[in-house]
Image (cartoon, rainbow, N blue to C red; front, side):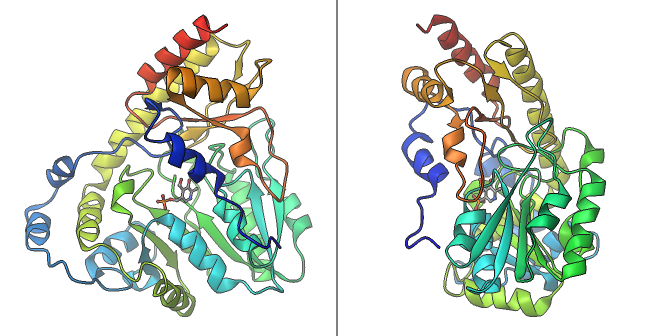
Length: 378
Ligand SMILES: Cc1ncc(COP(=O)(O)O)c(C=O)c1O
């Protein structure tokens, strides 16, 4: 177990570059919108609620109407199964802290969003199970089965995956649920990129809908493109455990920002419109990215991810991906995330990849700048 927490590599890199680079071509969220654009989508009742909003503390579980609207995004859940949070990051922290004891064991996938492994590693033993990079980052449930120990308490997954964009087949997903059920293992499923899929048929269920020990994590940040709201949630059928999560939240954010709660309600009220817009954007960008890489096959190997707002192509240049991405941001102002950002303490992550974002409106322009830089570089 590490004596001190490892820095969150992605966030450290972003704290330097996210707002300094001209183009964040590695953004994992869909294009956001202005407050007035969102308010234009409000029903007259929601607009009145926003205008009359009282800026006191809010309910620790979340506003009842917000929880109701979130619950209605699941097949079979009610408000009592939802705990709202300050973003999804808080959920990863809470679930691991509440469920795990030093004698427990956790299985996580690699590559991953780093807190998925760093938080449990601060508490107990963690085994990494790699997604199979060839051909398209598949989930091998047998490898998860082989990693299990008698004390495995939790399996942590994230589909569509950050950074690979992979989604398992329905067969693999069902097999994973069966495996968890057979061993009574909790399944934390980070579903923040769900609803942005290249092919809707690939979409897998939300685990809280299909598994009694499934914990679904979601947020307004990614598919909805509203990270500035800092509204996320956990969904779980087990109300006793959900209450333990809520007790832990008392030590963290306590309750949500009142304006953000109402704005999230408005966004959920306009859900189809927002998601359609964002899917269209990602789809269009994926085509532009495909064309870009197609004409530079000697430098890049690209397959469209199954879903989400990011992909993890291979860089074939002799300088290596770390030098390439560093020069690209310093000389052309285009930000990508190299493999080293996804280094894992529990598995080997290919060293020749970089994360590219598909959700921002300026993707074509940023690719143009990147292409010019590539053509001109010495
Ligand atoms: C897979 C995954 N989970 C959780 C988060 C955290 O989301 P938020 O910024 O809304 O807390 C991110 C953010 O990049 C993510 O990619």
